[in-house]
Length: 361
Ligand code: GDP
Image 1 (cartoon, protein in one colour):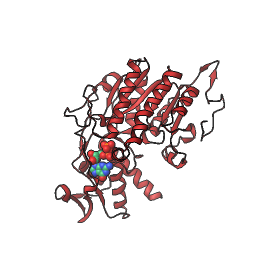
Image 2 (cartoon, rainbow, N blue to C red):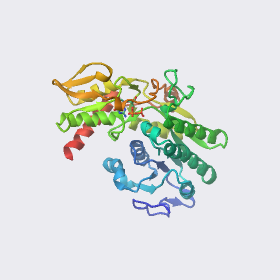
Image 3 (cartoon, protein in one colour):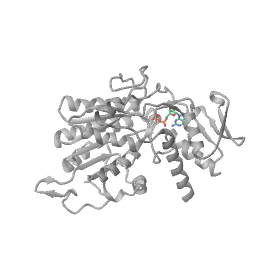
Image 4 (cartoon, rainbow, N blue to C red):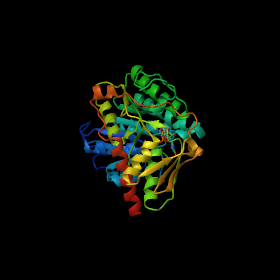
């Protein structure tokens, strides 16, 4: 039923070392292991001595490149699992009974959620429900983490946003994440499970794809600096976000599941930057000094007199969310969590990884 890509460990049919009926190792199941958070979280859990299982909806092994590049793919048992497949979810939970379950799997592109609302809801909302229900029925001792998102705040006028801020999602992605958030909380308050939600604000890393503005800018400008591309085109350069480092944010996920009870926590840096700041930080890391000209749709950035960044209305977001900036005091006070990587360090890290990959390709 479960197709494993990596080798099973020796001890029992599920790869768990056992003494009598007690697992010696904590086990973790991570859905969406192929993404950047799955990559950093699995590394953290392996380093902490966990047996790690990860799911991916695709059978294409090349999608696991992040784990390969980070060097721990062979230490993880990979399961092929589509979060729309309730029966397989139930069978997997029944079989694995993981100590901890991290639901990171999602259709995570806000833009795509407008064109694929059913798919987004089936994966993000119903997928979370299927996992929770499987845990309730077959593994109620499992501690469950739900990847909530700052997109649930959408159109809020309150700033910064905390766990007490009302949700006002503005797109199908935000609505699907709000559903999963409330359901996760409900499985704690109504059914007594140990469930937690991390309301994560934008978090990035050298493993971010070009579908997100950070990856698009760092990869694009790295190509420009190497003479492989003339210029990049972006949307609203005045859009602002609270951007942190994925590697910092996965530590908060793990900390939540070590608490005596589940809860909800905002995870954020509390600092806003514009897309223009992002472009400037990437250019600085590439030692390119940019000169900005024009306004709104006429905005361009020049490098040595040549246009290297321009604005294209095609990349503007319909129903842009309000200024999403998180108040993570609760996570800092209760969990003792602190981000360690600054915005400038994050963008520099991304640019350096892009340059390395481009130069070795
Ligand atoms: P999101 O916050 O999950 O939607 O992450 P994104 O990285 O896709 O977008 C972050 C912000 O960058 C949003 O406010 C976008 O409107 C803005 N943005 C500006 N230009 C672009 C672009 O070219 N691509 C993307 N994806 N976002 C852009």
